[in-house]
Image (cartoon, rainbow, N blue to C red; front, side, top):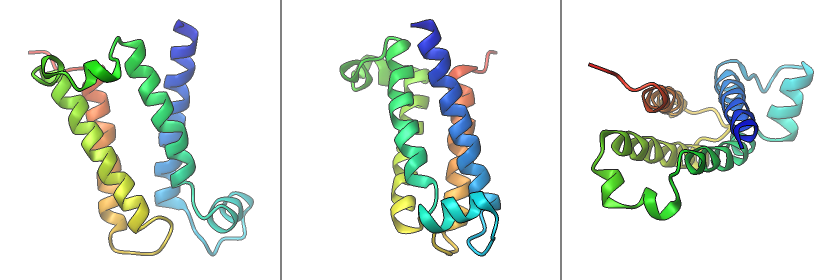
Length: 133
């Protein structure tokens, strides 16, 4: 199970890097191979990234002993770690909504899209490396 967890974490992190990189550097007008593949043929990378991120995220929670029923328990939500997890889930749902609204289309909402992605990364760091004081 430890190797599967490491693979899930690696896939999760690499997918986030690829997705955020595509947000910044994706160019639908480019003639480069990856731009043509992701921007034109696949319509962006967002949905594909989420297809990797959701299952790996659920697996990582399960590996930490957080089942679906425990995720919704008042006991978990009362902890600071549980609040961070739920803040991340909330922002992920915002990101899904932005993916539906903005997706791969030009829009000023892309800034909210990028800001939300960075906020999720920041919360993720706090979840795996909590502040000690």
